[in-house]
Amino acid sequence: MAKKFIYFFILISLTFCFPALTYAQEASVQLSSGDLSSLKPQETFTVDITVDNIDNLVGGYIVINYDSTLLQVEGKTLNLQDTTDFTSLEGITNTSLKDSEGSVLLVFGLDKNIAPLSGSQTIGTITFKALKKGSSTISIGSESILVTEDLNMTLNEVTFTSNSINYTVLGTGGVSGTITDSNNSPISNATVEVVKGESIVTTTADSNGVFNINNLVEGNYTLNIKCDGYYEYSQDITIIDGQTENVISELTVEGDVNNDCIVSLEDLVLTANEYGNTGNNSFDVNKDGIIDILDLIFINRRLTE
Ligand SMILES: [Ca+2]
Ligand SMILES: [Ca+2]
Image (cartoon, rainbow, N blue to C red; front, side):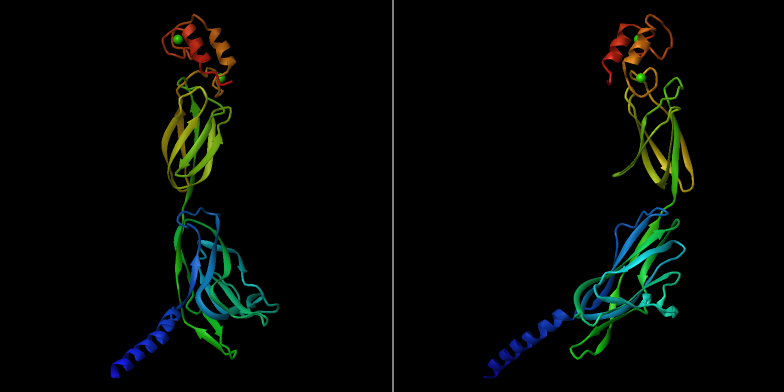
């Protein structure tokens, strides 16, 4: 009989304890954003503020702290429907309800017709702009408060955990250069690519073979120069904060004798008019010392139009 009683007692205990354990998860305020490890000055990004594991939320006073020397707040939105933003009430002058340098506030309360919120709720979104090179953290201020309401409409402050997010704003620099053939004559219209992983910035060299790409995040890149009539050219470059790297890229000709980045009939005609000439000459595209039928065929086989 005593044994049966013990089993019954255990059964009752399990029934009442496990739901309690399930609901004992602590509420949290979570900041989330995309990859913030290589921001550029002037770049904007958003941070979502989400309340997790909450029961019957009706409002809160959430302070988001940031380094105002590195970031500037571009905007904030409350994402909840039928909710009053107490910081934007007309006539508010109290600085406790105002954003300040380094702190942005989400101070909100659900309107009368709205049932308290439970589970996971994205409260708001802050848009920041990166100002200059540096690293820091965005965090929830310890003075933040979440308020819940029970069935008797009694308000309670609930304790919660929070995270912080790190970000890094990198310096920027540029690369400029001149593209020439092996005789030091400029090549126009070349496609210039600066590649880092998935990211590619592209420009076109001007009629003097000059190109310029700015606002690249500091770091190592590959510079590719593409041009019909030349071997593709690649070079490793390092972009340094506040500097413009200058490169001279010498392409090896492969049919484009007039340096316009395309192998056309014009190249063929120009070369044909040099037929029989000898010596170091840019029309001698196969570099055998004489301009002859081999050079014409060389170009003809590489015509791009
Ligand atoms: Ca050409
Ligand atoms: Ca030749």
